[in-house]
Amino acid sequence: MLFYNYTMKKIETIALIAPSGDIRNISEINKKIEILEKKFKIKKYYNENAACNYLSDSDENRVKFFEAAFCDNEVDLVVSLRGGFGAIRIVDKINFKKFENSNKFYLGSSDASIFLAALNKFTNVQCFHGLMVSNGFVENLDRNIEIIENNIFNINLTSINHKQARGKLWGGNLSSIVSILSNDELICDDDIILFLEDLNEPLYKVDKMLFEIYRNKKLKEKIKGIIFGDFYIEDKALDDLLLDYSKKFCCACFRCLDITHKTNNITLPYGKTVELRGIL
Image 1 (cartoon, one colour):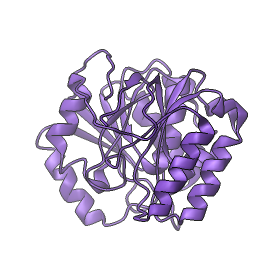
Image 2: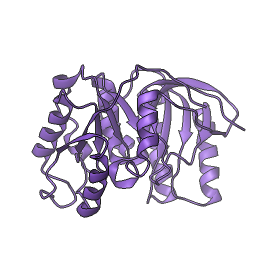
Image 3: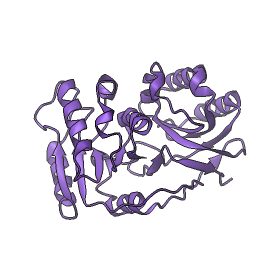
Image 4: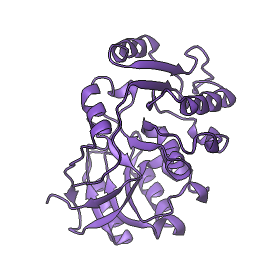
C-alpha cells in the first residue's frame, strides 16, 4: 500500500512535449489530442515534422521546448507524448533554475524517468510516473486526472520478503536509471523506495543493470525498499533473480506488475514519501 499527501490543484491547461523519441503515428496522436481538447486547453511544445532519426528534434530544440513548457505560467500539467530515447542527451543542458519554483504537475515514464529525477531534484514541480499520450493517458483520462488532482493512491503490492519500508518514491525505467548513475547530482538526497520496470531487455541485461545499481554506493545506501515492476519476462528465472537481489539489498522488496509499459501502468507520485505495507 502507498500513502502520501500533497497540495491539490485543478488542471485546466495541459502542455504536451516530446523531449525524447521521434513522434510516431502522428495521426493517432492528433486524434487523442482532439479528445483532450474537449476538456482542456492544450498547448503543443514540439514540432511534429522535425524528427532527427530516432529523436523528435535536435537537442537544442528539445531543450528549448522543454524549458518553454515549464516556464508557461498558464500551464497546469505537462505531459510527455512518449518515451523512446534522448533524455540523457539533453538533461544536463536544461536550465532548471528558470522554473525551479514552478507550480506545475509533470507526467511521464520510460525515457522520461530521467526528467522525473531531474525535476524532482532541482524544482518544485510535482512529478508523476504514469501513462503518456502514446500509451494510454487519454484512454484513461478521467482516472489519471482524478489521481493527479485529488491525491488518490492505494496500490496493492506483493511482498517478496515480508519487510516494510518508508522513503521517497524514486526510479522508473531500469535502463534509463542506470544511464544517469554517473551523474551524482541527479540521485535523490533522501532515503528512497526504488521502483523499476523495463521492456525488451533479456534477463541477463536486467541482471547486469540491477548489479550496476547494487554497486553504486551513493544510491545503494539510500535504498530502503524496492518495488520490482513488469520486465516483460515470463520466466521463473526472473522470479529467482529478483529474490536474489532482494537478499543482496537486504531491504523490503515487493512486486507490482502494474508498474509497466502497458496500458495498465499505474500513476505514481514520484519523489513523495510513502510507506510500503504489502498485501501478502
